[in-house]
Each structure stands twice: as C-alpha cells, then as structure tokens.
Amino acid sequence: MTVMRVVLYVLTFDTLVLSLMVMDEESCQEVEEKECGICHTIYMEECRMKMVEEMMPVKVPVCKNITRFEHKCKIVMNYKMVEEEHPICKMEMMDKNHTKCQEKVGSPVARSEDPCKHGMKCKIGMKKMKKQYPKTVCEEIEIGEEEKCVDMVKLKKEKHEEKYC
Image 1 (cartoon, rainbow, N blue to C red):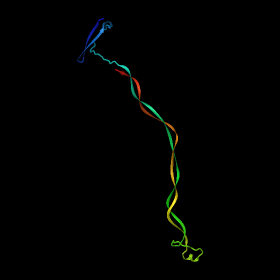
Image 2: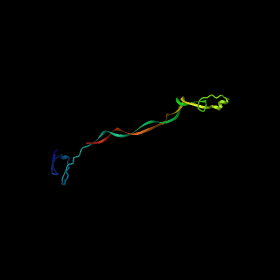
Image 3: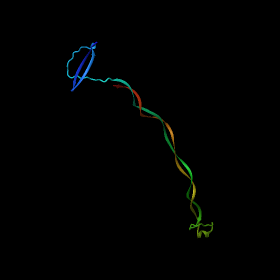
Image 4: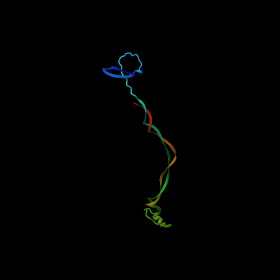
C-alpha cells in the first residue's frame, strides 16, 4: 500500500496556510478538478445529544377546605341593681306658708283662720333601682365548607436532551 501525500497551499487574505492531506491510494478515485478561485477549509464542531436534568418552574394548584361561618346576633336585656338619686315624696297637711299643720276635722275655727290643705313634701335621697341594660350577644354558626384553590409556582426536576459539543 502506497501512501500519497498532497500538499496544498491556500492563500486567504494575505495569509499563507499550509495544509497536509494524507490518503491511501486504494481508496482514492480520480476526479477531474477545475480551478475556481480562492479555496478555504471549513471546520465543523463535532456535537452529540446528551440527557440533562434541570429544575423548571411549574404552575401547581394548591387547594384547601375552608369552613364558612355566619354571625348571628341578638340583643339580650341585662338587669342590674343601682343606687341613684331620686325624689322621695310623701303627702302632708300644709298651710299657705308650706308649714306642717294639723287640721281638726269639723272645727270651724281652723277652717276660717288658716285652712290646711293636702300637699306633697319631697326631698332628694338615694334609692335602689333595678335598671335594664341592653347587651348584644353574637355567635358564629357554621354554614358549610368550600374548597379554595390558588396557583403556586414550584420547581420540578425535568430531563431533556441538550446539544453537547
């Protein structure tokens, strides 16, 4: 087996590139070549596909059951004993000058001179009273359950092919 060596000189933009090609004669075929101008060599990367794991964002619905409540309120009357200032009154026999007198029933002298009349005599004093106070009482009543969902973004591991050179 004889090996043929071919040396090519390529002139590209004022740069001289020397390239050496080695081939065995048996696998070669004779091809007619034409000269067509400036020649150049193309270099291509050798790439392959490779499986890669990557964390990717994914939208995930998250749901939970929520109990719904309703407020029911009512007014209740409370009673409390309090001591307050009040007028304390009583009926008395009084004359024109608002002084106490004793009228003798059937006595004509007493009627003509200074007649006594029934009158109310009052003074301010402390009196115990039962007072009403309204109070609002509320309670929460369960009226049912409902499912509430929201979308969340979570990271998920995914495998995909990637070009590796």
